[in-house]
Amino acid sequence: MKNNSITASITAVGKFLPSKKLTNFDLEKMVDTNDEWIRSRTGIEERRIVEKGQASSYMSVNAFKNLQKNYNINSDEIDVIIVATVTPDMLFPSTACIIQDQISAKNAFAFDLSGACSGFLFALDTATRFIESGKYKKVLVFGVDTMSSVVDYTDRNTCILFGDGAGVVLVEPSKDENGIIDSELKTDGSGAKYLMMKAGGSLHPATHETVENKEHFGYQDGATVYKYAVKGMADISKEVSDRNNLTSQTIDLFIPHQANKRIIDSAAKRLGIPNEKVLININKYANTTAGTIPIALTEAVEQKMLKKGDNVILSSFGAGFTWGAIYLKWGIS
Ligand code: UT7
Image (cartoon, rainbow, N blue to C red; front, side, top):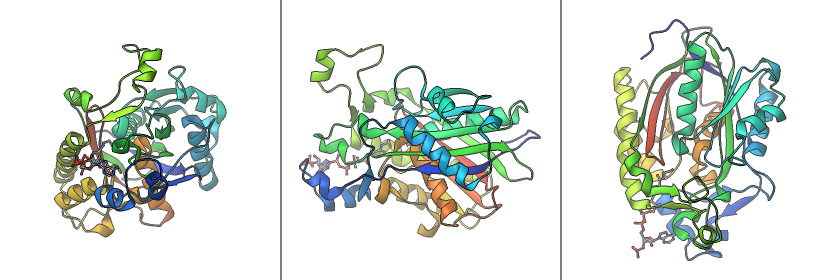
């Protein structure tokens, strides 16, 4: 819990989704699957996919432009850029560096953070500490993934699950009592083998063999990840909510990572909150990995679901395993 005189707060949001849609019906023509199976098992109806030549920096820069349309922020003022992603444009330099250049944030230092589906929450918590230190005043936090670049579109177990997208938030010192109040982040690396991309790193650099063996695509043992995700996300959301004396009545909005509607429903049930207090957009965008939560936050603002002072719980579970929850009092009127 907070014991610091400076409170960090989200003061601006933005998102970008590519316009190209890949529907369940499109996938029916690519692999042995069907719309009914995908919708009933996951809640997904369609997902967005980038065009060739577009990647995580492209979507992030556009998410920032979307933020700038609605909020008055000059790129020169930005102190830090953190980009949560597991699909950087390239291994190095970081995608954050490319974004820093493209948005002309001349005074910012920038780095990527790899936390998979929990990447945005890990990055938001990191940004909170930067602000609370007093040294930095404006931190941009991106959550972005170009999952289409690592998905095997001949594997029905994974290709139905993912989409591309980016979200961004600006974090600043709060001018009132609203802001990021509490967080709990967890890792259990023994789960690494259940959700991974085997090759392309220093252990298995790209060879003809790794390409032939399809090791540059994401692999998931879906049933095992599902089991851990249901428990992990529900437990941590409840832990953070109980620790802050929140109840089903006082939680105004629950914004979970969008991996599977059934996982979201379990976590919401555990919090005892009704459907109208849960933000769900997995039907439109599928799992955009680090993108899901900042995209959902932006949609909550666009749909006027949030007002100043609202109690919001963000929650995630993903590869690593990594998981977490953040409690914030919404700071934008
Ligand atoms: O964000 C990162 C964290 N990731 C997650 O949280 C994802 C966690 N996992 C899941 O969401 C679910 O496990 C899946 C949606 C991936 C799969 O759902 P499931 O209910 O666990 O299905 P299953 O893997 O147990 O498969 C059931 C059956 C299998 O057939 P058999 O062996 O029972 O004959 C699969 O082969 O469904 C089959 N199946 C499919 N059928 C039609 C698997 N994928 C498909 C498909 N279309 N796309």
